Length: 377
Image (cartoon, rainbow, N blue to C red; front, side):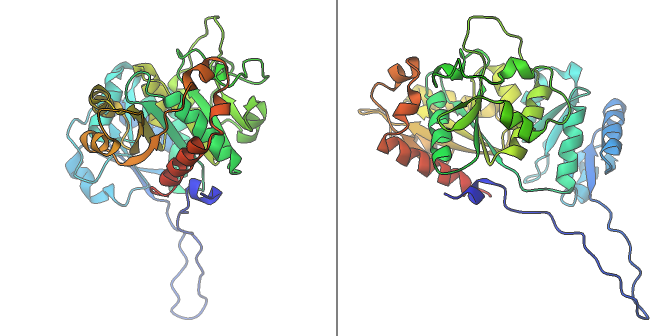
């Protein structure tokens, strides 16, 4: 695995053009930036998006329904689908972002999953994020990979896998950030024995808005195991949550500042909604059990339409094998997570990083990182 495998490798087409001066030479005309396509019949949504696109210096084409959108879909720099559109997009034409209004509530994410959207923008709160997203879509740059890890059922081992993957990537020289995406998980920093390490935690970023400088973010975070991490506090004190817009801003800065961002996503609906929908790829971890396979299949209905693979946690005497579970769930099998003796105790004692140095764990992490890097770079 190389650093370059973990970063997006394709750049947008150049805009350079030369103007001839001889007779018959065509006059030079500036190349227009690609349009953003908005599909909505809502005047309110159209007005919100028009202001955002204008502020980002782009061009917008608005159509009322999917039939009118078809001729422009493939050539658009980005496709925004309004929450008022309830028809499924044409096969193979998933919208990039589902846009809705604050009053849409949790149903917006369920609709996004059904429509096959990759991102969700709740307006007007996510206006700054959407403006930056549209700017990147018109002039894409190389950026890091945001990799989400989520348990297919409770106790699957997603947090352990996230720590192991971040630790393995750091050992190979990758600029990696580990993010705790479970506000109610007790604080991932406890598993790293880093609760006293100075640096920012999530509540410190609750009021973050607009563009966050990637270097300042990296310099302000605590470090454990050779990599920085962003955790919820491992204390008994109550903390206020961080809204989706703030999380999106932080993860966007992380994507620009790191080659790999590993997000340990909690299984609660709020954690899925807040963190999973800003990931570029998702790894689902599930034990080799029938009930875990059923729970995993249900979980997939709430995940964004990004590349998703399965890691099966192996255990001696498991009733089902990994290939059978992957086939039943309908996900590619990325690897088998070793069942490390006393891993749970190591987590409680803050020694999870020590288990990551075992040979079978290093082999597992390398295989999964290589699988993810070669998926669709």
